[in-house]
Length: 503
Image 1 (cartoon, helix red, strand yellow):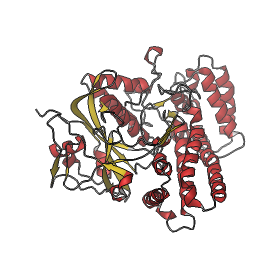
Image 2 (cartoon, one colour; image 1 turned 45 degrees about the vertical axis):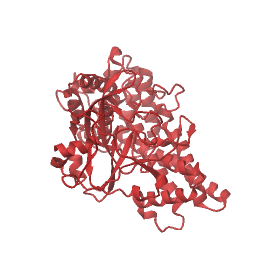
Image 3 (cartoon, helix red, strand yellow; image 1 turned 180 degrees about the horizontal axis):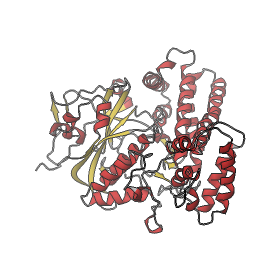
Image 4 (cartoon, one colour; image 1 turned 120 degrees about the horizontal axis):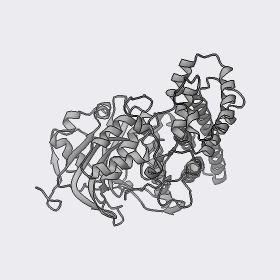
């Protein structure tokens, strides 16, 4: 057996996919060239074959011994340049001028079957220049959590990074206790963060900010190239992408947990699944991060935090937007004000669909707000409340409905009468409306207690709960007979009230 001390990175001239790394062609101050630290006994836990095919990769090649060695960080194609990206960030409102990839390496990029360029990154691949005395490794639990939650988000139709593979390393990592180590292969539109721009702005390196902005435009918003005001247009495009993303989070009860500026991708994808969670009982003030004691990143605060983060992004672009600082600030403020209208458009459209409303009418938004209030006062599960609402359209005797979720159904009954009156104003058959509601309101989400149950089983060597949970959340809108337990909220003794980042 090869030990961690004697394991060596090897280079292959064949049998591994060719990757291009355009980010590594940027100036050297953008990254630290780093080789991963090899592991002793790589073993594939899970490989995402459909995603590999979407990326134009050969699944059989990547699940071969050479492929698994690559996914673990032990073996790479000849000439591949792996880099850790530099970035800064506001963490819980406090600016840290140097963060960077402390436990991740960008392998390179592929152009997928849709012609979209996407990053492939190893997470947990060993220390880098940015590790800040950390070990650069990832424990098994956080790797499995990110795999499940990111794939669930993709199935829900929410922009997100994806998980291509999870590999056991055979080496322990030490947190509060000794844990098995693992490496996650993550796929993203890119890993450019608001904090990446902040890194250079903090150093008054306007040249680097411009290089990065031009790269981001080329990579994500090529339609902006050549415009008279490309950097103001870049800010506007990122604002729209983030407004759309956060609204989608809100519609499924998702709480990111650490909306630091270094955890917000300019592409508009959800990135960095640390202390994240889906709400059970609806509570606007819900917080799951073990370190968010002030509730900065609570569910209801997410739109405000996104706006704050985008303001920090705007600050980095001001020198590029206009040589007159006052005019640049004025333009940026106008763009930032558009966040709320973009966010509300997506949110309002989504809540109408969740309530089965096919048209717009005055009072719809109040109807949605009042339903949320009824859920909160009744401490009713957010996901099941909306899912079962469709069955209240014409509930049959003995059928499970939203009404049965309430111990005291009086408030729900009063609201339901208004809802039925609103529905009656539209010409649509009940079956079609119910189907439309079910396609918007998931039955299955990756609930915290099921994730913890899955992790504990995996720590004991049993990956069957992981595989089953992943399969269930991959079809969130389907009924899936026999899997009802995954749709149920936790009992009081099963509740998970805090999650952790895994570093």
